[in-house]
Length: 290
Image (cartoon, rainbow, N blue to C red; front, side, top):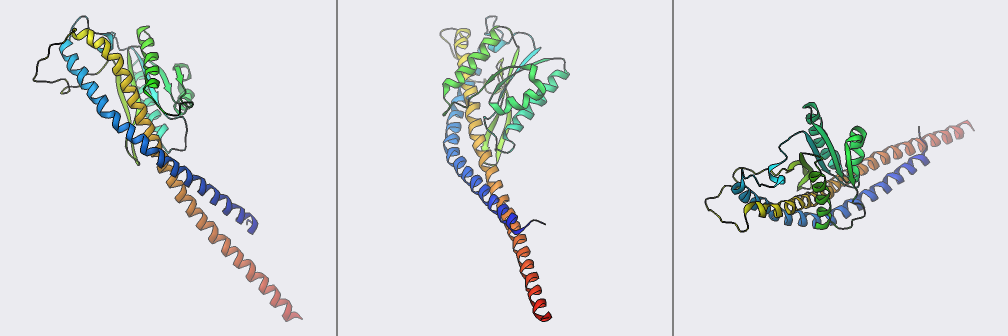
């Protein structure tokens, strides 16, 4: 049985841990507000961009001059998985849920005889994926030095992806990230961004438009921009999801620490009471013997 001194040290250590988790919870809560606002503000722009491109793409469907970002390469053999995760942990299942979704997609593609490549954005996803897919990781981007995410960060990623696509290194690119719903709900999401998937209903319109310049020329300019917009949206959604998951995880850790302190204190008091009782019995027994 541990001594009273050891028990006091253990209780003090647990209380110190509780203070740290509580502080981290408060920091995550303060950063979540800004991150959530940014993510929610980006959604309408990204959705409208997709709607506009879908409308133009429907008019250009079947055109021999359609950009490769829309028409694709005509093959479906090499897949690039753009996996966006966090730079830090202590956020529950936030990082592992994104990696799990990407891993399941990769294994399914490999089972179909496809070739899979990974582009990792974020340290945690890279560390998890390299254990199983080290040779398939073609690029890793670390954003730890970025204090505040900006569109320039998404543009940098989009340029790297476009360069590999234009070099013929892959046929299909799928973006993986976590969509923020609430503090307790973050949804791992897979979105194909190359070639662009035109959703039915989005492109439908009862109005006929005339474009100048031609649709193909407009798409050639808009599609790279849309790629950066969708990646930027994913980064913002991930940022909000990370702080939401961390806030929830630190709240749980704080509660668990409190329960541990309660149990440790109860054991300490019982042990101390038993020790005092034992000493009293020894004193009484000694007095009777005299």
